[in-house]
Image (tube, rainbow, N blue to C red; front, side, top):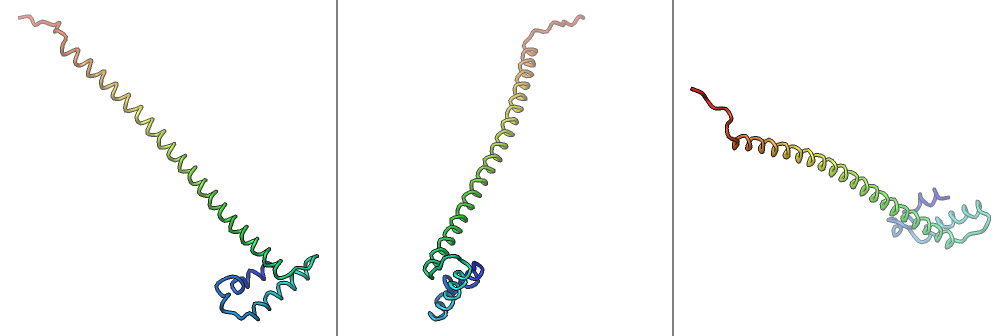
Length: 125
């Protein structure tokens, strides 16, 4: 039954709604109502079926919205994880640079202290 409605949906709800006659629409709805009532336990009217179809379409759209929101959330979390990894890498690099700068400062202090120290070796003539 759903396949039938999906097949004729453009004529009943979509782009072709204004291209077919009222008599044709009534015929399409009659076929759908007959199929539903032949398969179901309780008789349904065109209004009942149309309301249910609209409800299903609404749930489908809401499901799509939820899927999009979940995908956006996943992408944001993934992006945050990438940024966190990059920040950790930058932190490691900064620590390494700080170590190199500290080593260079020690070398400069050593060099400067050797330059200022009086020479202990005296030349003998």
